[in-house]
Image (cartoon, rainbow, N blue to C red; front, side, top):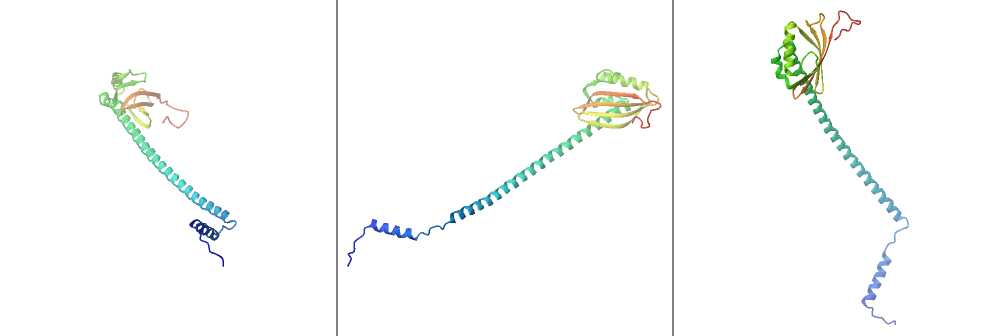
Amino acid sequence: MAKKTKRGPVARARTKAKTKAKRVVRAKPGMKAKATRLMARIGAKVGIKSTAKVRAQATAKTKRVVRKVTRKATAAGHSIAGELAHNKKLVLEFYQKLIGDKDFESARPYMGEIYRQHAPYAADGHEGVAEWVRKFKESFPQHHYEVKKVIAEGDLVVLHLHGQRGPHPFGESVVDIFRIENGKVVEHWDIIQPIPESADNANSMF
């Protein structure tokens, strides 16, 4: 009969570890590769979703920026259109007072503190305009005009007019240009062309 020997704690721990190691199921060949491919597919799906989300966020941000810029441009467009319309109204009223009514005092509130004159028949400044209006009224009291076109761009307003009962028997084609500053008329240019009795075309000068 074999004699039993006593085993110490260290020996028992080694035996238990060997028994546990035998029970470990070893990975079958190819399982690691399959696991790697599976993880790659999962990663790709996550990456696609992440990329799609980023793209969607970028698109939404772009749309917000475009809407904001469009609103600003629209507001600016309305503001510019309103300013040009105001300038047209200002010049038409000023012209009626100065040329239509031939009344410098009524036209003066529409003028800036400095008024620069480019027309060669009038002196510079308010005094030059006032003197010219006085002489014009004396010489052509029946003068009147018809506005054909009103054009505004930036700080300029252009009037294209048909002057009648003035110095020429068939009237004049007149282009008056005014510059506006701080809501006042501050500068003037003009081109005056007498209308002839006949023309080489039938389109008229207006």
